[in-house]
Length: 293
Image (cartoon, rainbow, N blue to C red):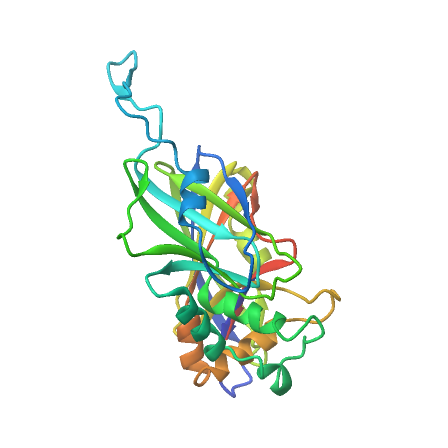
């Protein structure tokens, strides 16, 4: 689910959250790959993503000429590649930092001792709830510039997958991607009201309701931005495996523990991007888009 977290005052009046949503309809298909990290930590997946999602560069390939005399390329060679890891205890991003150093930083920012302090959902292991918070904090999507069928990154920068669970029993992570070289763009504003006592909200259905064009979108992408400085957006699990324990409040408390509610929410970020396929948001089975306040 996509959730929202925000900072609430002691006032009894409801607070209003304004979201700006942008959607893009594309002709390119959403593709999927599975990566299997062999251990907990940070893993370079640049080569896996490049091979799976970018068109193969063919030397000396001639361009087709249409009836109107315009040249038409067979392949999408330039644009943006959007990728998303479809799990809420893993993360994705760009890094030039040594993998072990980055993983140690994750553990220091979100320590497992929080299981004993304020996490409610703890029965799936000491690495589980910290893994969900790391995912919400560091993000699950990335946009990569593509030039001449290659990801245009500096030589020392990698696209990395953060595997935040212990994987001695084996773990597979699903990664989705779509290439954007053209599309139909639209933007709308969404206003939502919440009680000041609520710290985390599942906003998935609000996004779907306010973007009727999504149901008509075969392949595309949606980006949602919260305009309030006291609001964070994250893709997070709605409940634990028991289907009853709500995880949003624990994630909101974790943001607050990072240095005060406002500071924690600022670190978490105010933007999420989600691929769309066959009229539906490509979230994990138990995921939602959430707002924390």
